Length: 50
Length: 253
View 1 (cartoon, rainbow over the protein chains, first blue to last red):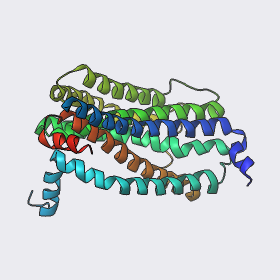
View 2 (tube, rainbow over the protein chains, first blue to last red; view 1 turned 30 degrees about the vertical axis):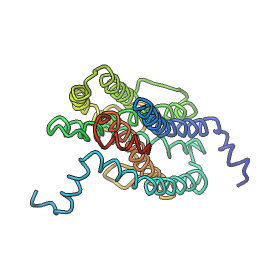
View 3 (cartoon, chains in turn yellow, orange; view 1 turned 60 degrees about the vertical axis):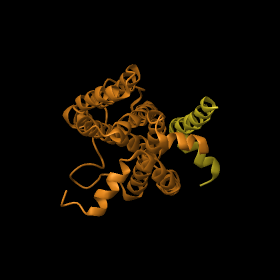
View 4 (cartoon, chains in turn blue, brown; view 1 turned 60 degrees about the horizontal axis):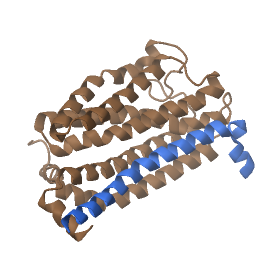
């Protein structure tokens, strides 16, 4: 199987890759949001202390 | 309690203590991420590359490797949320309340993914993006239940009270879980019946089944990772006036 064939997904490229892409985005967001908010929590708490 | 080994009892007692939970989960995280990456890589390689195309659906069926595990997670997380909510309601364990509310956005995300990928699979195979079929409708209700939990929690300022309200809503909504599961058998409309979780042997070839189960396990680990991230954030916010959080802020960890 060539790379092109793989990405073509037998003509269903749009449906398959949109599904995988959206899943990736949603799953990434669910980790990035709490991690960045925790960093924010620390920096803001520190500011309030000073 | 005398049936449970002493080590296990002590483990749970220590885990219920916020500072211990916080530092333990921090040390646990790299291991969880490593297992998740390995499982996902193996599952995707098996599902997208090794597994053959379906004889009827061609390559479009490959959406199954995220659609079905996401749908399973949407139910699994809801049950976890309801149980954690009940534990919080009965024993007033703060960590259980936090696990319950932290599960909601992750469960909502998986429900959204299941609906969205189902739609993207339905268009080429069924010829429609959406239909008011029993399975699809009950899964959409699940999404609204999750959003209701998130909204209700946000609407009440006192978070201990909010947790109580949310737990009751989550417990009432449990009714929907068996409805979703059996919907394809009770109302035979467009969505196909179960191929994996049935009494007979699964009607899916092993080369497709293995990557599917790998992805299901990978999503379990993802849930654990995302849940711990949210749980730790919520814990810090609720405990911001306690000594262990103040010390950690000063150390800027």
